[in-house]
Amino acid sequence: MALRQIRLREDEILRKKCKEVKVFDDKLKSLLDDMAETMYHHNGCGLAAPQVGILKRAIVIDIGEGLVELVNPVVLKTKGRVKDNEGCLSVPGLAGPVIRPRWAKVAGYTRDGEKTIIEGEDLMARCFCHEVDHLEGVLYTDKLEGELFEVEDEEEKKV
Ligand code: ZN
Image (cartoon, rainbow, N blue to C red):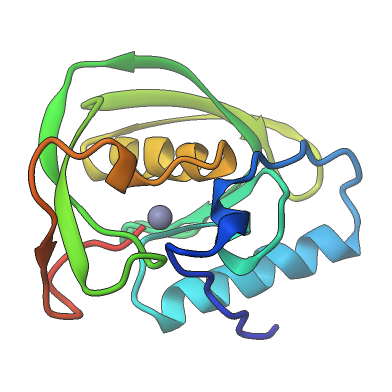
């Protein structure tokens, strides 16, 4: 496993649409391993492959309930709307309010290519939507419902 460099807000790679993963090989497994290590190192609760410069549809999430890896994730269904502050490892030191679903159901694949469906609410639903947005080249700063504000490193959940 290795730490990978996190791409920051100004980096154009964060604006590109990611490609579907078709081969579930060792390269994908080491990408997912490195993404998890990088996320934990920076105290994030989610990370998408483009944030480490890889334009593949892969995300990792851990909101304190264990690591979730999803390849080719698709948001199937959502319920409710919650406005809450959000941060991002690619936008360090800042946070801002974004409306996200209260609940979301997401389909995707495991690292071994097995189909999986996961549901989550509140922070988990927020992370699903934030990370899937990354795969489309969308940042939360595009969806702000108020002003960005400065935060101390540990204050906000970074995804
Ligand atoms: Zn992010």
